[in-house]
Length: 131
Image (cartoon, rainbow, N blue to C red; front, side, top):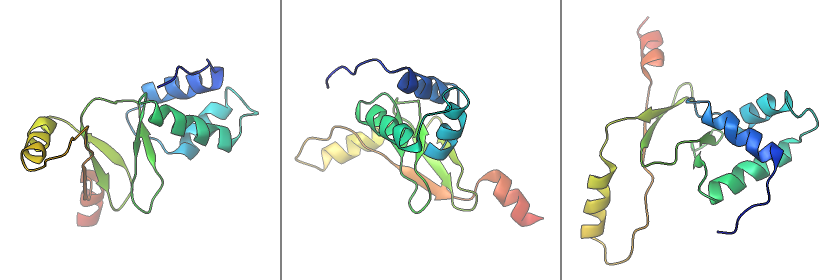
């Protein structure tokens, strides 16, 4: 992909995401970036998030009917999406290579990567439900 012209706003968005583990929405990113760049528009934040995801510098997590989330981690890992509160969590120690090997074994084409999401209720929502 082509190298992008440097943008302070885009760099601020990336740095914000690198400091997070909670997979913020575009609105959350916008609110935080406005503290540094008060004149930035929501459209600019959306465009930059989309561009960064296309460039492979961040990951975009599509959460079905709720807002997309963004992740600075681009290494192979899976996510859990809570259907009650909408939070997105990293799932650690799940071997993504095994799933990809199985898919390649049964597919004649070329596989470049994959995404896999797990859905359910997070521990906090489960605890609240049990009370």
